[in-house]
Length: 340
Ligand code: NAD
Ligand code: ZN
Ligand code: ZN
Image (cartoon, rainbow, N blue to C red; front, side, top):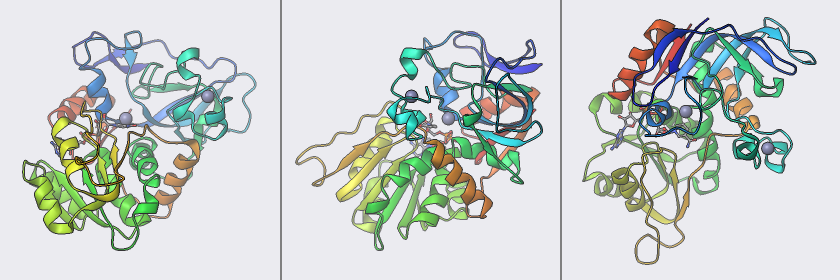
């Protein structure tokens, strides 16, 4: 089959031919219908070392139709359209028992890694899934617009859920970076809270998408951003930073009111400075990772209800390297999705 692989540190992904995978006991083989392109892959491909062997088939947002079942698999049918829950865990520890496999207590010890971030990923014709519990039925949902919900939807959903008690009527929330995750975050904030939503990004084009998906106000993310947000609100109750770089984290901690959440989702290397005399009283900082199995089911229900609508640009498998290039250059509007 064809697959898009990261093969050598520091080089661009390549379209290659690899052996067709076959499901072992307990595994499920999917014919991939859609796979999302996430900025985390760009970060991984910029590291001098990676915590898994290369070559690696990319893609941690996956959807497909069930093509074959390994021995002992029950509860899924060949031909069923499914989305893949990506942060695979052991399935048995306390966190996994609660559906929070994203925080599995034993994944590192057992060498369990997500597809596309260690295990072979979804930007290929076929994808092996380690267990049927990692599949959520898509039903009639379009895989192309639904597949980003497995990360670009699930991650902000999990991030926002933790701050819901603070986003009461009269509150305000800031979204920094209105790309793949951020443009879904704006919709989730609008759907789940009465908060005024202020979106920050670096270009007018990005801010236009933020407006279209429901931001009340947009602010250019520059050196004056914090002052401009403060002028609009006097201080906000939650900031969701989908960039996480030093300047955006500085903005995030500079726009909060008392008892606010600073939620760092982007992995841009920024560190939040919090303390007495530095940030308002009771500032809380969180750095959440991905989301739970239950939350993925909930996010897909929001899409089914028409409440969340991911903006996608679609590409063929052969065009995946170009999609990564465009994402790297900040030229993707919404989410890039590969249709093998
Ligand atoms: P993306 O490229 O689609 O979106 C990033 C957006 O940030 C773009 O619109 C870009 O213009 C904007 N941006 C860049 N610099 C900015 C600045 N200084 N101020 C304001 N906006 C700026 O990326 P994505 O796929 O949505 O991922 C966003 C981040 O989240 C990445 O760092 C990614 O690695 C991370 N991520 C984290 C998790 C997690 O579980 N914590 C999960 C998925 C992705
Ligand atoms: Zn991702
Ligand atoms: Zn576990």
